[in-house]
Length: 184
Image (cartoon, rainbow, N blue to C red; front, side):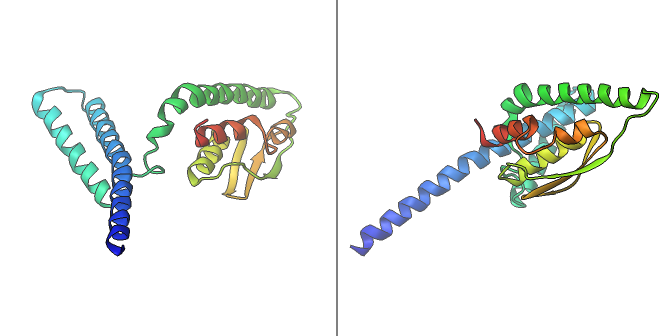
């Protein structure tokens, strides 16, 4: 009886090792390809020697990153790639341009109608990656700066009352980052 239990546990461990090895291998391949493309873009010269040197350096850096256990979901979130590239980043770029125009309008207005505020709200993100994406998105948007980001609370400085009002929990950015983080 005990040999059957130990065989079951051994089989479970093997399945767990295979299920974690596949994503790690895919992430490692993605890191290697990203490093190689970066090398080639910076090189600007495409001789066989330089391409081989770039591939070798990318392999070495990937091997070191694997040994240091840096290639994980937070370090290299490949699962966010397509959704982020086609869905989140274009929306964020539009928000950055829209906010930049609003801030320029406030600055160029003769009465300079600024009303700086510090706003506190609870973000809906569950992971550190989601919190970082949300906090950086707030800071990238002109007129707002994320001063402090913790799992239970964001502290944000806004240049105008309208900017502060747009940061309440459940706003569009918060919802979009939560969807990006959750994979919906």
